[in-house]
Each structure stands twice: as structure tokens, then as C-alpha cells.
Image (cartoon, rainbow, N blue to C red; front, top):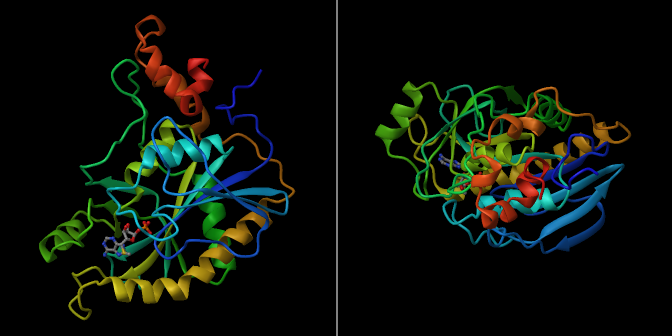
Length: 301
Ligand SMILES: CSC[C@H]1O[C@H](OP(=O)(O)O)[C@H](O)[C@@H]1O
Ligand SMILES: Nc1ncnc2[nH]cnc12
């Protein structure tokens, strides 16, 4: 029998959306119900909105909570990913506000990022640990299939979308200094945010294909012709873009509706096959039990 943690042979799309700053709901869905999901990692940021759009199931989680009460460091990323997996998600789409580190990525544009640099340091970054050690590859942290579908959906919703780009994740909650911003530009980074790491790493550990639509809200603080970023200007841009983001999600669902889901060619849904190094007889049963949703497919729990 297929383990609930195994999404390889699930033929219905269940898209989990992690809504970032400014995106606390999605309009136009059917059969909406907010559901509390318990996880062994603590509380997720909020209840999850279960809804349908055509044949597609949608699971929406506002990353900072509906009242935006959680800082990027206080988000329980493990609980969020575990809860979305328990909610049956086959794929995860992050929608995130970012600062631009490039002249031609202007506020209002979207970027379908494909790489990350993780400069966060005060967060739980793995489901695994003493008693069950795993090393997954995040060489290609984004699912190319979902990313292409999301980018196309955002274009159809009217957005200017750049394909590919490196997202630099900082701990926050403060924005960067000018020296930091200049350094990240020298590193070749394209956009800057505070939340997609370790979220993307944890999604990979949970064998969930993950993609990000980054919404550019500001030029951080490096641009000589623009003042430094502040929340009011970020929110002003987000208010203009939230409707486009919602439309992108609905368009994505419309595209997928009626299409049976097949396993990802990239092998993301089976990446734990080659990642767990602790042999079965040396595993901590308590940790193994906590990994039921994330890794039950390979741990047989
Ligand atoms: C309100 S600006 C800073 C805030 O916005 C971004 O959050 P998210 O990725 O959830 O949209 C950024 O990472 C910061 O958390
Ligand atoms: N400039 C910036 N730095 C970090 N996170 C952000 N989110 C939106 N704009 C940002």
C-alpha cells in the first residue's frame, strides 16, 4: 500500500501555496474551509485554507499568519512544510515579496527564481538530526516543471516575469545595510528576501517539488536613484500585485485542471532514496515517528 508520505503516484494535483507578505487569502475558490493541522514540529503559521479550483485541490497557508504576526525568524518552517504535506500537497508554490538587486528587475515585476544563497542563521533547517541523519541535494532547489507552469500562469495574469535568478535569503527582520546590499550584488544575486530559506531546503527533505514566484517590491538600498526600502512602500506595491498573484494561482489551477499529475522527472519526490545515512538499527524511534509525513515513504512509518 502507498504510504501517505509518497506522492510519486498521486494523479491529482494538490497545490500548496505559501502566501507571503501581502497575500493572506486567494479569491474565487470553491469549497473553502480553514483547517487546523497538528504536526510533531509544533504549530504552523496558521490554519490551512482547503479549497478547490476546477479539478485542482488548493491548500493555502499564509506564511506569517493571517494577521502577519510572525517575523521571518519566528515562522516555524518545519511545521509549515510538514502540515502542507499532511494536507495532501503534491507541489508547493511560494509567493514572496523581494527586493531587487538588479537595475532591470523593477518593482511590480515577478521573478521565477531558480537558485538561493542562504545567509539565515537562526532557524531550524532540517527535519533530520541525531538518530536519523540525511543529506539531501539542493543543487537545484527549484522544481523546473512547477516553476515554468507558475511563470506562465503569472504572465497570463498580466505580470512581467523574469525566468531564473538567485534569491539571497537574509535573517532579518531588519533590511540590509548598503555595504551588504553592494556585496550581494557583487555575488551576482538578483533578489533579496527573508523567508525562502530554509523553506526550500525543507520542502526538498519532504520530497515536495517547490517553486517561487518572487514579487519585486523595492530596490533594497543600493540604487542611487531610489531611497532605501521601507515597509510602507513594500506594502503599496504589494497591494497592487496581490490581485495579479491571486490571478496567477487561479490560472495555474485552470491549466492543471483536467491534467493528470505525473511524477516529476527531476526525481524530487524520491530524493530521500539516496539521502539517509543512518542504518535502520541505529535510528532513534522517536525521531523516526516524527518523520512519518516527511519521510514515511522511505522509513516505513
Ligand atoms: C514586508 S517586507 C519584508 C518581508 O516580506 C518578505 O516576506 P515573504 O517572503 O513572506 O513575502 C520578506 O522575506 C520579509 O519577510
Ligand atoms: N529589500 C528587501 N530585503 C529583504 N526582504 C525583502 N522583502 C521585500 N523587500 C525586501
